[in-house]
Amino acid sequence: MKIGVDLGGTNMRAGLVKDGVIVHKEIVPCPSRATEREVLLCLERLIGCLMCPEVEGIGVGAPSVVDAEEEIVYNVANIPSWKEVPLKRILEKRFSVPVCINNDSNCFALGEKQFGAGRDYRNMVGVTIGTGIGAGIIIDDKLYGGRNTGAGEIGSLFYLEHDFEHYCSSGFFVRYHGLTGKEAAVKALSGDTQALKIWKEFGSHLGELMKAVLFTYDPEAIIIGGGIASAFAFYEQSMNEAILGFPYTETVKKVKILVSGIEDVALLGASALARKAMK
Image (spheres, rainbow, N blue to C red):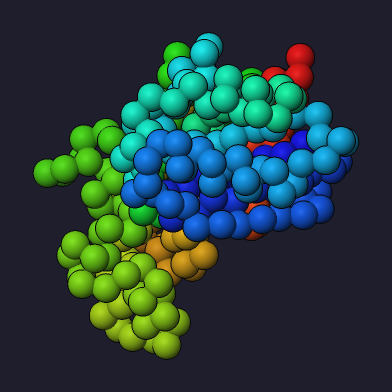
């Protein structure tokens, strides 16, 4: 058995995984404004709720840059006190099992590759759309993160007057239309014309992001996850229309753009990291 952890600034989630199935899950609020030690204690208590003699390893996905060799997390998003935390060393000392740390978007991609919609593809990109934009890259069936697990930070690529994250995350709805993505989805579901127009605009921006992914990685599949994924029906058409502007038509014909169908796929991906730690 393994434990997968998804470290978020709002909530910390952990799952006890056996044979690719989450048999028990715990979720606690993250004390994001607390001291480094207080946040660590909260994380340790969360993992402790799931620890048992059968646990062989722990995998953690963090919204941050992670030193791929030392597995130190730097400048964790939405947890200001976590500037430089040697998380692998701390957790291994506390729980006496191998620990592996990686970027949370990489955990999403790894989870999709091993347990979800990415199982049939050797080369794929998992794109998470929520408060921010992240991506995990699978090349020849292997997770590729670069030196600091940041190879998928496509949201920070320049686009229009800002970057892709500015226009392709949930912040787009607040900045330009004064409502949340969830509120826009509820309105669209009721047939609200203005809300449907907003989603169409969002899809056009997201299509440009997908073109950047195609230029950069030329994957067989792009799998969308995160909070915005559930509203896919509202922006799918305008996204696809934007993608048609990609200059290589054969690439557009062959790539599959899919939506994640597993609620806790990032936890499963994090648990899969533990296999690496155990080698």
